[in-house]
Amino acid sequence: MSGIRALQKEKTRRQLIDAALGQLSSERSFSSLSLREVAKEAGLAPTSFYRHFSDMDELGLTLVDEAGLTLRQLMRQARQRIDKGGSVIQISVRTFMEFIESNGNIFRLLLRERSGTSKAFRAAVNREIRYFTLELCDYLQQANKLDAEVAYLQANAAVTIVFSAGSDALDCDKKDLAELAQRTIKQLRFIARGAFEIGVGNKNRSEQRSSSAKDETK
Amino acid sequence: MSGIRALQKEKTRRQLIDAALGQLSSERSFSSLSLREVAKEAGLAPTSFYRHFSDMDELGLTLVDEAGLTLRQLMRQARQRIDKGGSVIQISVRTFMEFIESNGNIFRLLLRERSGTSKAFRAAVNREIRYFTLELCDYLQQANKLDAEVAYLQANAAVTIVFSAGSDALDCDKKDLAELAQRTIKQLRFIARGAFEIGVGNKNRSEQRSSSAKDETK
DNA sequence: TTTTTCGGTGTACACATGTACGCTATTTTT
DNA sequence: AAAAATAGCGTACATGTGTACACCGAAAAA
Image 1: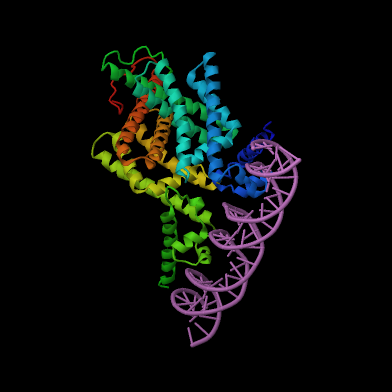
Image 2: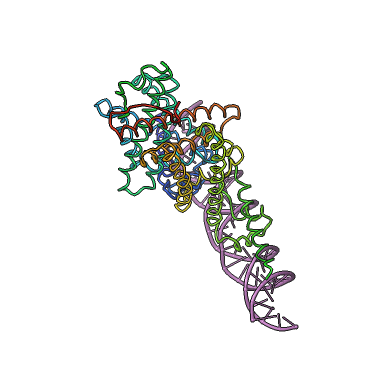
């Protein structure tokens, strides 16, 4: 039982996954791919597809998982950079923009299937985004000593803004990308500052207002 | 030249548009509609479609225009309510949520085609959203006396947050809708407060800090 | 009135799709 | 060594697609 068979199977399964990812582009969405196309691109007969996935949907959900994984890698990378010092917001945005530049199609997949026609897909994408948000929430809560609710709202809003900026970046001329990043950074600072001010107000109504703003908003 | 002919033509054109809109749902996107389906739903022979649109794309762009129109109606309605007094943010969010409840499929169309596979569609949707944003920007600028750039950034961020909330609302249980609205309102307040604080700081560095916050953030 | 225009129809075709079915060759199990 | 399992192939078929084409009848223009 050397597993030479299972090994080969895993390999062609990857070929299918990579074939699908490879066909994604700004004018080609996953839902517009056909089983036959993917199989052909992977160098397989159409019917062989079924040895690996029962459905294009099943392949699609696998891709979403894959994308979620990439997203989490991204965060780890960002945290590494942050630990070396620097503005959290600035580094996060820059990291995200780099991610989109080299993983545009994966990001497109998430964007599109989030509002797609399959409930399962939408749920899967939202799950990945929720992980992303919750990790940011944890960070905010302990780094900025924020109320749990405020931290969550801030994290959620920030992720929304960043994803939207990412979406814009996909259709952006390369030269306008830096400006877009700058605007995004400013918007995230609005949110951070607002959350801080209002969060403090919640704890300690109308006392200690807007003092010592050593947070991320300047 | 009574125009009885042109009249009839306009009528069946509308039937096509309505047929397309009618087929949209959470599990049916415009790009998944076929010319034949739409024609059939409109009570037409497939080939008659071409008397009105050269393409499904042309129909689609018409739908996006239609959606933009609906969106602007929405804003007018919101402004009417605001003029009668009340929190701008609260009323705007409520109005938007009502819009989604009764125009879910139109909103879905915008959401989906914004990240769709046709550059023309993406551009059309972004144009509509830009109008929406700019009108809000004007309002903020004169109502809150904000710097032009700050007002734009705030408007843009606010629209992003509201659209994202709308997207969530589409998959939401009805009972969770009120909570979602509340969270959205808080997030918009973060942004408004942050924009105010930072905007003032821009004009008049480290003087007059966080004074007379009679804006929309409390 | 005669002629032209044109919205709508039905037929027809080439094409792509998903997938059922049976076969083969090779690995795995017995 | 014999038997079972299985990844991959090719064929085949029913179905849905966009659209070219010829035609019709009524409205509009001459």
